[in-house]
Length: 135
Image (tube, rainbow, N blue to C red):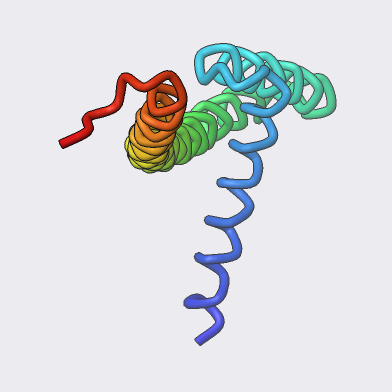
């Protein structure tokens, strides 16, 4: 039961970490990846300096393994963010298209009203000067 809780918590942490690096890099996934790798190397160097020489190789291999694993999770989070962005973009475009169509419809309705009122005014002015149709 405790294992089933740990995986979502770790997954949320990885996604949060990915979001942090993407935010700090200004939204650029490649810059976020480079920043993450730089931080990973800095952390590995710090750990390496604190470990005895005999276990440095093992720690380096484990660090590389974890780095690849976390990098894969970050890539997955970036992919998901791209899908969300594309969906939101298409919804915004559809809304803009609908709004434009509605605005054009209202403009056409206004034009018809103006033309009708202008024709009525013209007929009224013409009748003052006797150019109206008298049958």
